[in-house]
Image 1: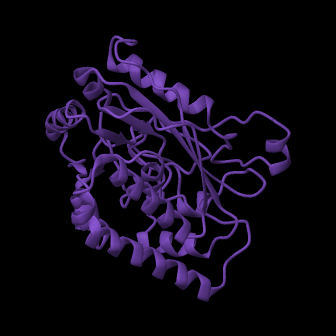
Image 2: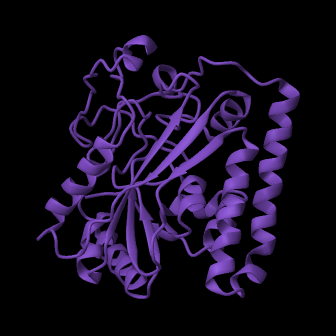
Length: 310
């Protein structure tokens, strides 16, 4: 395992269980069928949609992404406004592959993804057509070229989304924001838009089913989400950090991480979960936050959608 790759202590066994009601087998199959149909429609309809003016095109993309999240039975709530058009680096905490349509439902944008995603069935062709920027996460030497590509996209007026934790976390704890991605915002002199993503149960506690962590296969994650009931997703578009406010990428990354952490749901430790009654009563939790590269023995989520190296 490369020491450059961020890691997370989260595992499917410890973090990805669903404690709520379950959908029937028939409903779960229908959900997966609806999701696959929407992805196919996205692939087939991409070329005609890209010919539309910016405003209707973005409206259709947001509607499609919202429908895809809803196909899995997840209720979506977006807090805040996407704001004006123009280049912007969007940074969010990372829980699941579902984070991609969640962000797209709130702010249509280009994504930074690991190169493996381009080979995935259905999602691979869709990501390539939608202008996804790919990073070879095992090649540290490829990082400067990736930052340069992001800078060009930002200068061209694109919104680029990055998950700077570099690895998926379960939502009860979060990783450190890696600094390299923020260099593109500094070079392009564009704002940074922190975004907080949360998957919750009816009682407000974090939902485990959407977590895509550890060595969890994509097929297992899809089925677990399709079977879960009572899951809702919240996207919070936080105030943008204007260009020039922070002198270097270290300060900028720290400011963005602090914004996401303040706006996050109550955090539950990975090793010892607090009861829901304590969370609702406002009892502060003590999250486990190991360094993303502190332990080479920690499991890296090999199927994770986005990875960033420092």
